[in-house]
Image (cartoon, rainbow, N blue to C red; front, side, top):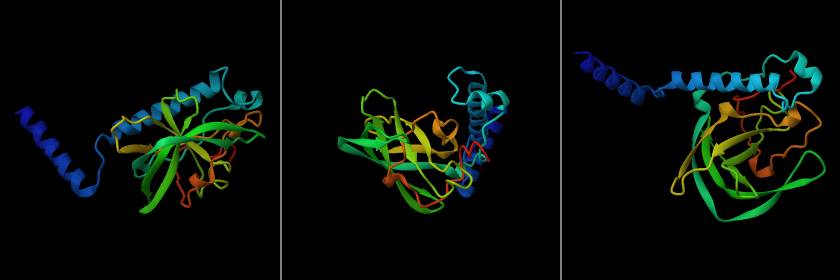
Length: 203
């Protein structure tokens, strides 16, 4: 009897998901995101590698975040560069760093088509794709210099990746002027607001 009830409940969940766009396991997702943010706050408070200046670290409680929003977890179609070109990404200080232009991701935010370039450190040994981007929240609610997103390298035959903007984060320059950080290239300057992830550190 218990098994039948569980099956019926699962079927109802699938039907509701297909009809109403409800994402399954959302409670697990939100719990994992809360844990991720809590751990990052702890690192900023306690780690000797925290980017915070000594005065800020002494009074630090928590980073500022937008409320989590599943609508800002985008399923993106990827196109890979057959021969990734090496390019220089300007840093906030007067220098540049080498990256590989790994490919491109196309997705939608608020029913508007968007695309961003996907970068990989020029060493080729990194396990994550790097997405520096700007959007229309910059300089208002979020850091004026843009934010970053990291995405695990997809499998060789993958055609899609997930862009979880709830995990968008500020460069260290947002916390401390002693750092030099990659400046989002022009091709990643989005003309849409993405109210997700980290807000400005100093509101």
